[in-house]
Image 1 (cartoon, helix red, strand yellow):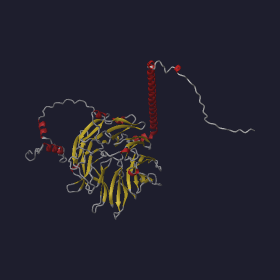
Image 2 (tube, rainbow, N blue to C red; image 1 turned 120 degrees about the vertical axis):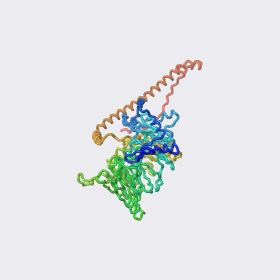
Image 3 (cartoon, rainbow, N blue to C red; image 1 turned 45 degrees about the horizontal axis):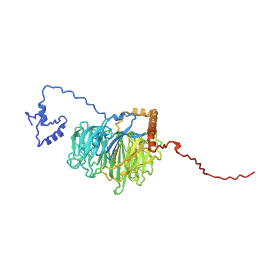
Image 4 (cartoon, helix red, strand yellow; image 1 turned 180 degrees about the vertical axis):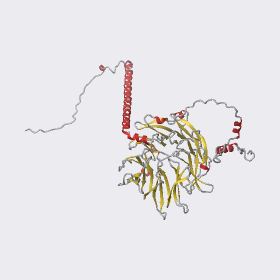
Length: 617
């Protein structure tokens, strides 16, 4: 380190044992914030030599050729507003348009890759959160595809990747191969530059033995995971993007943290911790980056908690499984946080039955709960903006039970992305029972259907179509139910309009849509003029039906004309060979009636005989 009279000259030379060690050190320390006013600028020595050789006179480089960017959102301009989905079965990967009138229409099936003697995908596929990219898994790594022709956008080398997680903004990507002891089991990538930002070794939860996963913040500005500090204390490590440095160079202390969840709309962390010595269990809400605790709720006799955010971050649900003092009996209740109200009030909902599932309505104030101990549980619907009977107009809104559906074959809940409708799905022992229920109408029973052995249900982004499927694991070569593999498409009203069975069926995934550009006022305007839009689309549907009918008739006419032409051709061939037939038969003409003795025979048969006695007068 060269020194001046009292201080250093501001730079130093560091020698490493190998080139690889020097390159790793440069990647990890370049751009590191030493404090608020000092940032490390680290370069390799050979780069320093190149910089010293730069001439003093600037020479403008030639302008690079124009490279047209790929429009990864081109599919949104479909004239009829159709959605896409991808199928993964056997060795095939196929992207389809979904058209409720004619069924799936193939958009791309990997034709380029097949022409080159390759498969488009070796393992699984996954869409990015806004539908810009399709990720295909391969043994050496993953590939990202996009654009109208599904061209390759990037290739990221990470062997045996089992899981990927895009940031909500799609700028960054996490890949994980779940290899123990691999210092690069987890890699954070910059998607646009196809560049690795930082790698991590896989860590495991000491209580469950499961790998500890990273979680993205709603804007992709942060990524966090649970960890232990040097003293063995519980912390949440929060890294800033794109530097991938710890936020303010320190972790967030969270004593006893068992689980945490980012808000889907704000940089707010919610986490819970069990009772530790004299400290009660509790739930904390922490604002990032200030680390300010904006709400805290103490809980007692806690066995387990499960966090669930409403899609707009307006409400947080904490399902608390409690035990009695003897710890022999357990019961449930929900702690419901109103995030947009002053001081974040909390309401409590007690449910004595065992809770099997809970789901918030997207963008709404309602939620559904599956509860019950028997083979046919109940499904209850609640609202956070209820007004009790007899309450004065403008009175405080509160938690209110809307409806309870008794004895339902239901184990899973799937709300429509548009809200208002929900699918009650009975998987496992219920063998694929389905009920399409209108929550706005609150009827006694919805439209029932079924898909035998169904283990996958997903709404399309528009909330118009529901897909159900029977899938098998990729490594389940001898999966015993693969004869039932396949998928069905249903309207939101529960009508089946397409079904296909496919052995070795692995995945069905709708292509997500980006957030709507319409604000709340624009959406209200659309709803207000809904009848006008309905008439417009009804006319379009009639025109499509008419075109399909004409196309079908034209096909039948073509077949008729083809058949008539075939008959005429065969008759002409037959007539042309008449002279040859007569010669071969020694002058006998089979078409001349004079060569035949014609005998006419009449046969009468009594079909019915009935006798009626008529009395004389």
